[in-house]
Image (cartoon, rainbow, N blue to C red; front, side, top):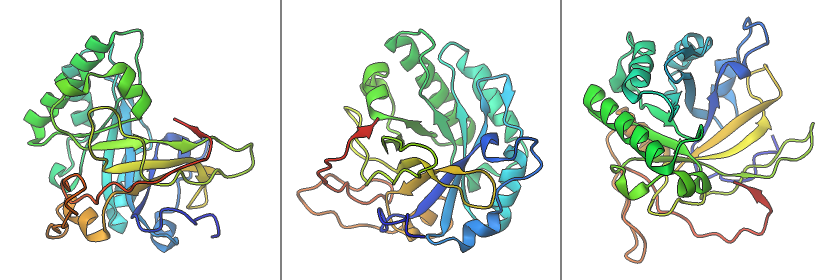
Length: 264
């Protein structure tokens, strides 16, 4: 497909919710097409639910299909800063109660304010991070975007976590597909490295259902991606002395000058 002209050096992934299924929930994307696609879909983020009271109806089917075809899986849960952190994380883990958490990497979707202050939002995020660390042995990845984080989170108060950051090119009019934003994404103040870049929210849908799909790129090689999920031995990357340290199998941030009008 001629659409894929950018970010070819980064492993490719998608993220899914019930919005990627048919309106009646009867049809979901064909995960076999994910594996046959060029570029191949190598990882998938799947929404589990929102806060403490909502479960994504498509999560069980997406998860089963992702496991069947051998994708690296990132279950993600949308956090409400207005709700109790422990209650929300109990709901998150309850959805995953029959799943081997060692084979997954969890994600907290942090992009809502709900009228809360920067201090209140930061406190809820910290409490959620620590709750999951105590329950699973590791911190989850944080999903957000740089400008939102700068305005609503006190990064210096957070533990060291991996970041999945969204940054897109401004959407073209329907029915046009919007090209991927070139890696790397803008980093929030106080964040030195990115793990995943959500590069497009209106890329061509893969798998025969829907029209648009969200695209993501992994900051590392295929071997480093698989090592992150415990599927391969870790790969040590030698960093140039004038660049920041490599972290958890990630590649160095590339310096690029972008002249495109973007939406962040």
